[in-house]
Amino acid sequence: MSGSARARVEASFSRMREVDRPEIWIHLAERDELLAQADRVDELCSAGVCLPLAGSVVAVKDNIDVKGMPTTAGCPGFAYLPQEDAMVVARLRAQGAIILGKTNLDQFATGLVGTRSPYGPVRNAWDTDRISGGSSSGSAVAVALGIADLALGTDTAGSGRVPAALNGIVGIKPTPGLIPVDGVVPACRSIDCVTVFARELSAARRAVEVAQGLDAADDSAADGRPESALAARPRLAVPTRRALGELAAGWEEAFEGVVAGYRASGAQIERVDISPMLEAAEMLYGSSFVAERYSAVGTFIEEHQQDIGRGLDSTVSGIILAGKQHRASQLFDDQSRLADLTRQALALLEPFDALLTPTTVGHPTIEQVENEPVAQNARLGRFTNFANLMGMCALAFPAGTVAGLPFGVMLTGRALEDRKLAELARFRDRQPVRLVVFGLHRLGQPLNHELVAAGADFLGPIHTAPAYRLRLLAGEPARPGLVAADPGQGVSVEGELWQLPIGALGGFLTGLPAPMTLGAIQLAGGDSAIGFLCTAPATALGVDISGSGGWRTWVGGDATV
Image 1 (cartoon, rainbow, N blue to C red):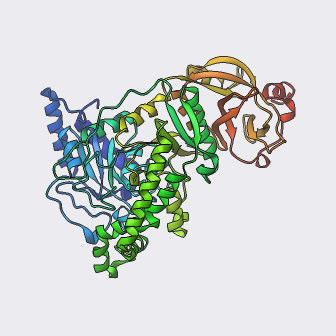
Image 2: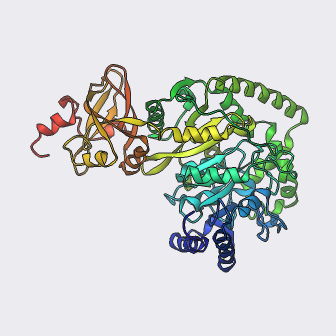
């Protein structure tokens, strides 16, 4: 980090006062104590000591031990005071990190929503009516709001990836065992992972490199291994349309925009049936594997049943206590079934560098989760639940916005190919991407300067395949919206093709007003490119101007514009 550690701690407290989000924290360190730690880090740096995380302020999920801070796992009656840091915390501290405090979570790390806590629901960093995602809710929001540079979470079903996606940040879920889990309250000990959140991939990867490695106190810990260099044209598996399932409005188009971006950057894309992964995902809660959650904290809940609905979350308690019902014979059957599904999944991935998916399927409101606490939660884990069961690594990263909320995608790979996933996430920025525009970003139009400022080059005019309609959107200034047409109802629409650095696409996504997003546009001749699309049904938009053939012709024939 640049600047002093002391200045960073001061800035963190200033940011906390500014955003006023007390539900993020279960325990916060004293300001004077943190400043004293920061001064020691600054002194070491001044003396020439190399500390890769010098001055980084870190939030820690409150199921991970921090010496001198109570560990509650989101349950006040479970609290204890650890005498030592968890190994992952100790490793970060040794490299200059400053532990800011312990963050709120779905109780006992059971949930993907961030609302199952007696300390209150953690509200989303972008929209306080929406969920933050869980279970690592407070950790993700602390990073997204700029309070912390890094945060530690845990991930069993997607708890280090779903909240990353819903708050527009990076979430790294390493190969199980790569980061030791000693000093972590278990959810499902055999597959739990410590995860890292950051606003930038480079910062998250730096923390993972510091935190990973064997640990004598953790017999499940693994060690990294050298990986082969990423090919010039990596191969990505992408789910078929059927395997994608139902996504929130605009999310499929946004995902196809990411896929098109990878293809434009030189990646080879192939649609695959990910049924083995999806079937395994359902086993995490729908089989005897849930008994491991009972093994972790079930006895505690049984001994404190009088607290269910108060200090003990009723949904969490119900899930964990239900785990006691399973027989040992069921576990052996389910292990055999999972082993078979894992063989199928690894065979499917064998020709590819990774699987690319949306991170999750939608972004419900807090009220929706309150009304359907189990159903809403279950939907969110569609693409995340299987990874730990199958021993895989995963990386969630932001891919712009849809309707003003973050949209995220995820790379999932084979065990110990964590560094390859990071290279794949960066791959999109290596090559220029083609962008087709239809309205105000065209030559001579009011927003063309945005393309020029982004370093774009004009390639020439194009026409789409005859599969779209052009609508005049409401509001000022007048602008068109391209909409996918019903079968047999589309026309070919004229536009312009530009080339720009793919890293500049994020700026366009962030600034797009609803209902517009970026998606894959089919061009005449069978080619495709990324372009601006409207996600709302055509009938919900304004006047159809498709008969003009394109925006330039329509503007030229309309004296009022």
